[in-house]
Structure formats: C-alpha cells, structure tokens
Length: 122
Image (cartoon, rainbow, N blue to C red):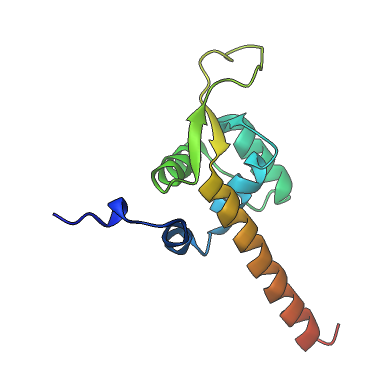
C-alpha cells in the first residue's frame, strides 16, 4: 500500500505545516535559542507576546504534542539545567523542519507587514 510519508519531501513538510498559528510561531521563537522545558516555553511565549498569548497547561502540552506530531519539535535531554524538578521535566528542541518553518513564516510576516505599511502610507 502507498504511504505518502514514505515519499514526502522536505518541501512537502513545509507545505503541510505552513502558515503557522500564532501560538506555534511563538513556541518556535522560544525554542530558537535552544532547548527549554514546557513551563519555560510558556513563560517565554508570555514575555514575547506581552501577555497576549498565555498558555495554560492544557494548551501548552496539547500544542507541544501536536508540534511533535508535525515534526516541528522533538523531546531532548536536559541541556544541563539544575534545580528543583529538573530531572522530571521534559525538554523540547526545534527540529530542522521547525527551523525552516519559523524562517519561512518570519519572512512571510515581514513581507505582509511591509505591504501593509506601504498601503497605509508609512
């Protein structure tokens, strides 16, 4: 039986995940500097969006699970963090597909903002 995933190219992967939702975009931005555990990702997204995207545990871990399923992120080992609960935390990092998707979406948003500014006369 034919399985589309057996012959899927990198471009097919990008086409499948783009455009990114604001939540996925900001999670990837949070992971662009390196691996983080879930709670640190949620805090970073809150900071990046000045509190406009607040991720409770259900939203956070549901998003992380979907992003893993899409191949945008993967679980990784603790990058060397110490402290309370460090050994129990799950850490995530961006995959090459996640990096390509973030780059592509960033470029799309910059082009859209440029067109909007131009049309608004600024």
